[in-house]
Image 1 (cartoon, helix red, strand yellow):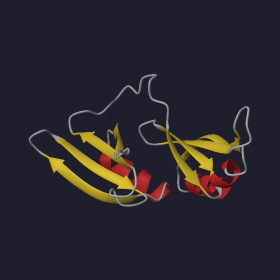
Image 2 (image 1 turned 180 degrees about the vertical axis):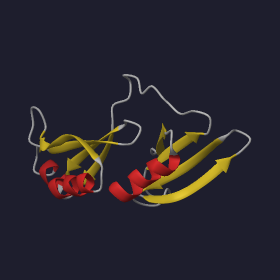
Image 3 (image 1 turned 60 degrees about the vertical axis):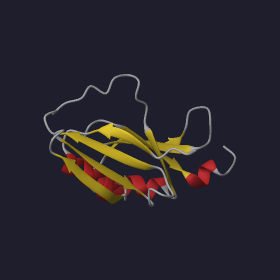
Length: 133
């Protein structure tokens, strides 16, 4: 068994695709509209679905707002150089909601960005993580 994908609902699919592709470097793997259900699914990731876990964006055509609730935490993405990654994201208009720095009670360097719908994405510096933190 393995995790295939995680799904989040988005209010503006093109805006979200731009965020995940342009700011986080994901590739659009497939996209399909379901007119009878009035929704579109888009799958993005850093590799093929056959090999890696991917992100599913669900756009319900008639919904323009979601309450994120307090059950959602974040998605996590490992990066090689968290400081330059955050600088690039900010330069491209992304919203950094926690600047890079060591996590509380540890040495792993993390940061948080927010997508257009308010979902938090944790960036984890892979080099600091592998140093035993």
